[in-house]
Amino acid sequence: MRALPLRRLPPLDAMIRALDPSGRVWLDGEPGHPEGRWTFLASEPAETRVASFAEDPWAPFDGIEGTPGAIEGAPLDHAMLPWWIGYVAYDAAWSEARRLGLRAPMRHTRGAQPVVCLSRYEALVAIDHVAGAGWVVGSDPRALETLRDRLEAASEVESRAVVGAATVPAASAHRGAIERALAAIAAGEIYQVNLARRWTAPYEGSPLVLWRAMRAASPVPLGMYLERPGHAVLGRTMERFLRWDREDRRLWTSPIKGTIARSGSDDAAEAARLSSDDKERAEHAMIVDLMRNDLSRVATTGSVKVRAPLRVEPFAGLSHLVSTVECETREDVGLREILEATFPPGSITGTPKLRAMELIEREEPCARGVYTGALGYIDRAGGLSLAVAIRTAVIADDIATYFAGGGLVSASDPDREIAETELKAKVFLEALNRVREENLD
Image (cartoon, rainbow, N blue to C red; front, side, top):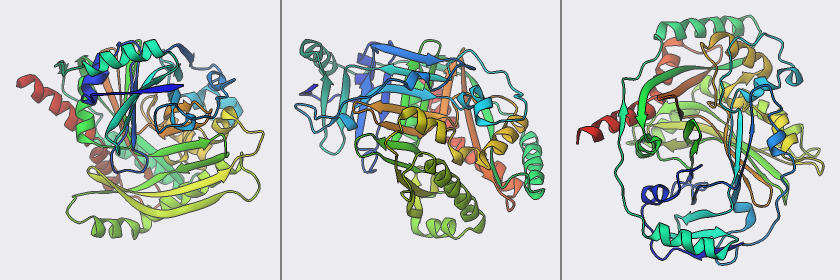
């Protein structure tokens, strides 16, 4: 693998539009965040693997090993470089309901979109936000030079989209689901569960227009834009689901549970309120325990640890409680074993996880699709980097869809929980308004 430096660094939006639209992908970083140093762009995948609903969702991950090594000409190694990029939909978990032990009936029909989609990219654009530099990376020198010339000549190209009014079922319907979930908690059926609402809006035009607007509304370190035949996934997530270094076998997760509106004027005071909130702390502690249990299924004895617990991380409009749980994986563990042990993410299901999934299926009015699944990549060394698919829109069949939810515990107040979903939906709604305003210019 080698890298050619970009002699001119055009805007990211111009570079993604300069790429062939077939299978375009944008892994978005955020300067200043430890996980947001790098941004990667690519298109024209060499191979795509998918799993449809009711198929083995982990089959696309089988046989992917990777190799360690440095990248000639750039400050990158194989463990940093995306190779297979894509998503695992939340609905993949219901594909293997029997293995998981889900007993309640499946209420919702799953659609035609894949529940797992992985595409292999042999050439990428790598942007280092710290150095303010970029490279094209791959194995074919002539192809890299052609790609570099195309990118360096890229210029801003205006595109348009037509957006209709966003709609969401009445808050009273969500209140009813919350109240039934709280009754289940009071009866000892469950300790914590995450319930979501769905917003939809008619959408015609390039998905990149909405992505650009969402990106402006919500800078995050783990964003992902992915175009596939028939649909596009636009994720503005800040939650780390899994990071696995295959070489040193370190696996870690950073669940988010606990949210407060962020004004930006006094982060310290808002952080103190969030970290001292008994309801938010209790909810967070349950999910940390769940993730410790999940990681223990693939960990060497005694290696599961909680690092940097209950820290408050500020993002655009919101601050969150975050902890990190890590372990060393056993020698016999690979990608399949890690995903079988941990998916779907505990922070967006609840505890106990299986009962929470059954309650979600009963109380939410539709299947989640990609939402609360995972977005990310397998790196060139065979490791794994996945984010939780929250703050994520999907565009398919001229409809943009967006979910927002929140965790419930015994101390939850329905009014506050409804307000939290609306707060989390602001990224999507503000982005839709921005697209409308651009059309008026």
